[in-house]
Amino acid sequence: MYKEVLPNIFMIQVPLPNNPLGHLNSYLINSDEKKVLIDTGLNFKQSFQSLCEDLNAIGIKLEEITDILLTHFHADHVGLLPHLRSKSKHAKILIHQAEVELSKLILGGDRNFNERIESLFKANGVPTSLIYNVGKSHPALSSQQAYEEIVKSAIGLQEGHKIEVGDYKFKVIWTPGHSPGHICLYEPRMKILLAGDHILPRITPHISKFMENSSPLTDYIKSLRKVEALDIKLVLPAHEDIFTGYHERIAELMLHHMQRLNEIVEKLKEKPKTAFELASEIKWFVKYPRWDEFPPFQKYLAIGECLSHLDFLERQGFITKISAGSINLYSLSNKPVE
Image (cartoon, rainbow, N blue to C red; front, side, top):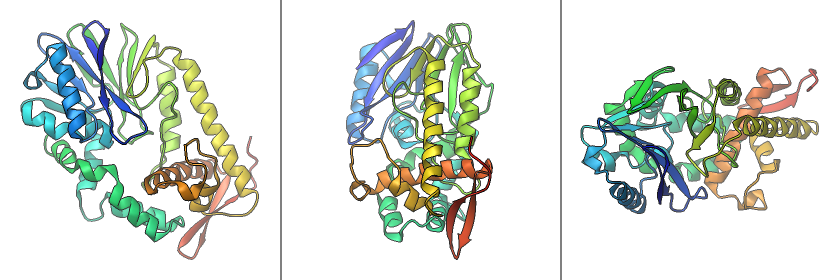
């Protein structure tokens, strides 16, 4: 399904099979000289067929696409890249440089992406069996060719990069948090924001810590403040519906994270705990009533989200990380939480 949401900007709903999100909003920005496709969908035949059918209905052939811009490197945004490149051989791939570097880690190296996650999770009390099961089901495994395309061909974007398509003059806004190299596109004259997964109208974007030397929640809050300072009339997100009232939505997102931080502090008043223990006790807004019923990948996401909040609290001095042998425990410090 597609619709023209602004002159020469089409929102294409790409189905995400077996995914609770339902679909990805891919955007086509069309002009005589350029045809820019923003985000692609998961690596499924059904998703590719649907995307092709909608592009054909708009009147665009795959080989006419000049640029494929990716808001970030998650599998539901990059998965169809190899299929698109097989037809649009000369299309430029545009993504933030940080996501190019992460794609290199996913593909291998001295200490690759999965090994770093495994080390971090083991240190935070995650059972080896769960780490193994997550490794087998991670969406990145079905997108290896996409990451190869990114590493081989992508142009690494930076903050302030200009993307001009017809009458639209977008500015790249670097918004790390949901991923280290997440970007939004801002059109100051039209006051529109192509937001990727940075701000969604109802779902809270997932903020997880999967790398030891990172602080994703700190980054995300700074990125929300950066976007809050812009003059925006319309937000075009990667999931759910186009929306207005971005100030109110940012306030809701900030409140959500404050509540989650306070929930963790309350749990730590009982005794020092591992990140895995905390993740199993937190109230998650998912369809599974008990932690034992969470699928492995859902547990993986919950643990990563818990770690991002623990990192934030530790950096602010509200909690302390204690080494108990090879396992990290978290306890309250003497600093009061305001």
